[in-house]
Image (cartoon, rainbow, N blue to C red; front, side, top):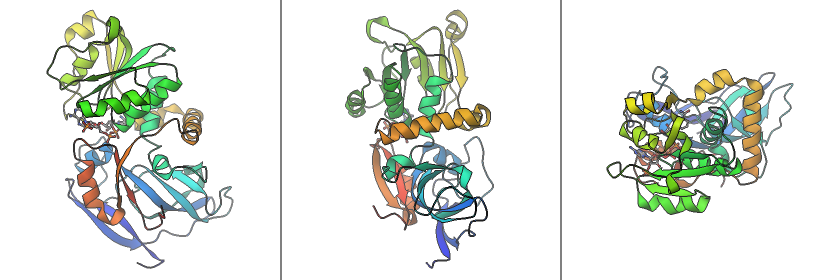
Length: 330
Ligand SMILES: NC(=O)c1ccc[n+]([C@@H]2O[C@H](COP(=O)([O-])OP(=O)(O)OC[C@H]3O[C@@H](n4cnc5c(N)ncnc54)[C@H](OP(=O)(O)O)[C@@H]3O)[C@@H](O)[C@H]2O)c1
């Protein structure tokens, strides 16, 4: 490894094992308006696993550099850039499983020098998904219930925290009892442990949620819908079971539920620059205040990407799997 070379992870096929760590030329020096960012910490999300398996909404031709999130430090700036060397930033574009990138300065979000790097690396996708699903899908009022499954996920932890900040009542569904207490400790008012086979789910006092957030699909969508009020909305945003979400005709026709999808990438395309700026401005403030975030289960050097990906694909993790680069000093 020299100053002119960097490591990157490349996806080469259609499986979780089809990744290699390669040595590449360092990116070009930044031109006018550009910055070079030394990535420090990058994340492995379920979307990255789907992308590696060729099951995501978009798929670049192989070989490609995976990764959608990370945090880094600016190591060089071009002319006409308000940022400076040493600034900690979150790059907005993907292909982050790499040690260094050069990109337009307007495509990074500046963060505090003292920011928690793990949490900063996890900021772009899951906290934004939580906030946007709670604010931009249906008008929610303080005191309304929202219910979600796979609630011990990073999105789920952030829905609990963001929901709390917005004055919502949050009910969580998890598939293992061991995951329940941590969500209660975060502020979830109700945590239901459901292996998908028992009686219909119920909220206390027969309460009903206005919004149901489903990351699983299949029968899990229908089970969640039992707790959603007539006329309410169920949003599918994840494919964790590999099955399409389904609601009964009874739910759709007689109870007037709406089933719709959410994809952050589509939201980016439609929301407009001022809403995007507002959402990330709010998230950066909450990050600085320690009001959002998710647990980390493990950190691997990027050179051990294969082990890191295998770990990220395992059930029962206690948080996100992250990768660090040679620029990360702890
Ligand atoms: N649509 C969007 O724009 C968008 C944006 C961000 C995330 N997402 C989706 O949101 C979901 C959560 O992402 P994340 O990064 O927050 O996840 P994460 O932190 O990596 O956690 C994954 C969670 O899913 C649970 N899980 C996995 N398979 C399951 C199954 N078959 N049934 C029930 N639970 C299951 C795991 O439970 P255990 O702990 O019990 O193993 C774990 O809690 C993913 O589907 C992801 O693709 C979508």
